[in-house]
Image (cartoon, rainbow, N blue to C red; front, top):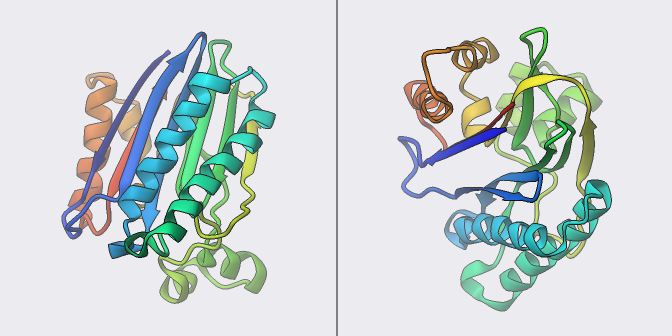
Length: 238
């Protein structure tokens, strides 16, 4: 198992509020991507604090029971970000998305998601499969109101319905993935909103590029599409 990650502020943003971490403990790997919200209210602080707190929980408390561990760890991550946001005026209103995956050496993947960062796999049929469901106004408008994706993006762009650090208690979605895959990809919306699936598949299948170069290419494609947001890509290669 090999893993790679890269983050970039994009072309249009003055600051990078994305963060990622990849760590290994025994025969398991934790990968996490967080996309801070709050603008001047220190979204970068929220994303970094969330990632570092989850990594600390993984190093100190991971017990090979990912579903239970994700629940307890998310509670701690959310509490720490929420409490800091309430202590200092400059951090008021800050929060972050988070998508995290624990991958075992046997290939099982367990995923936690809060917000609209995403997890995908490139499956055995060479299809890019989205594993997570966005907690976003766009998704709500499509699912509940039957709005077209194009119209929903006009109305609900950049509005998320769940985030770490905004409320004292938060619930995340937890997924277990047992199917075969060649790549697991975690990314922020600065990538998945601007790079189509067929382009991502093309990059992941390029045998001339290393895993690091594939991450760099995905970021470059998002920048070529305008670079309107911070961009983060993490790949776990089997």
